[in-house]
Amino acid sequence: QVDGEAPAPLVSHTATLWHERYLVVIGGGRHCVQHAQGADAAGQWRMSSEVHLLDLEEMRWSKLEARGDVFPPRRGHCAVLLPASGNILVFGGTDGESPDGIESTRADVCELDLDACNSHVAGAHAVWRARQGCEGEVPPPRRGHCGWASLDGTQLLVVGGFCTSQRWSSVYDTSLYSFAPTARTWCRLETCGEAPLLVLAAAALLADRSVVAIVGGAAVTPFSDGLSLLDQRTLTWSHPHALPHQRVARRYSAAATLVGSTLILFGGTELNRSSAASSDVFALDLSAHFEELHQLAARAAANAATEPAPASPSPSPSPSASASPSPSAS
Image 1 (cartoon, rainbow, N blue to C red):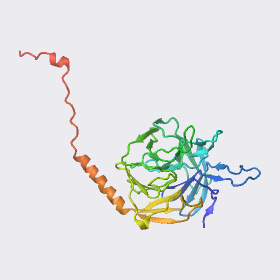
Image 2 (image 1 turned 90 degrees about the vertical axis):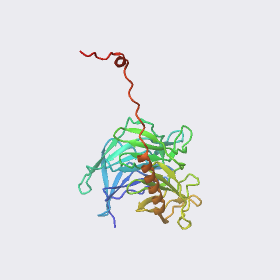
Image 3 (image 1 turned 30 degrees about the vertical axis):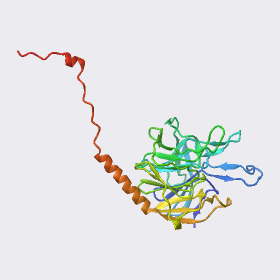
Image 4 (image 1 turned 90 degrees about the horizontal axis):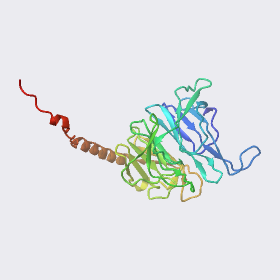
């Protein structure tokens, strides 16, 4: 039994584990299927900017009063805990449609500081900080993307999603971006291997953050019914073939987590069926794939360590030094 003030029914929200005990639910939306007086018109989305906390030990919900900068309502964003700071970074998402009918997506970064929050104290609050004035190569606005923490736990990494252009709301971007919150700087990273089209895919990160495992997605590609792995030590994409008994029906909007080397996948909507949601649970053993990546990364690190450092050019004498005569003996 779960007590407390539970959030309203939501889709396209995020749920992030904090302090190994709390599940932090941010934003999301719900679709109005019929018109009611005083409510949104049928067919419209209603977005949320609320933050809810589920205490997994006491099984109790609480709604957090978030202070600080304004956090705009949204769905389809990503929310990533950065271990280096203990804060959650939120990027992107959609807040509805613009007047011309094109979906309005975002490219902003908001940081949620939960250190002041204590679920046992009445009036507990979190603090939002808008990361404005970002520099570097800022990714295009998007929703339905994947996000996770960098190998050292200091940066946010983002890939995929529905990106917005001036005419279309479903432009695909395969680039991998990183965001350094302290410097407020975006950077597009160079990767090896074939980058997949990732839209509404499920991503999970190994405990040591060395490898990201991604399954499915709404973009119909050779990889959307299988696995895509990104080794964060070498920034190399790979797409291993799952064993026949481990194959997953092509799906999107599922959820995934890694327990050791086993990928647990739940739910989603299958592409070759109706839009009904699935309650299937899959367990994929990725230990052989991870072991292969560990060996490749160790080999690459060993090769880099044995390569001779480039010789630094010897300084050339200055004209004045070469022209000066040698001192004469007295």
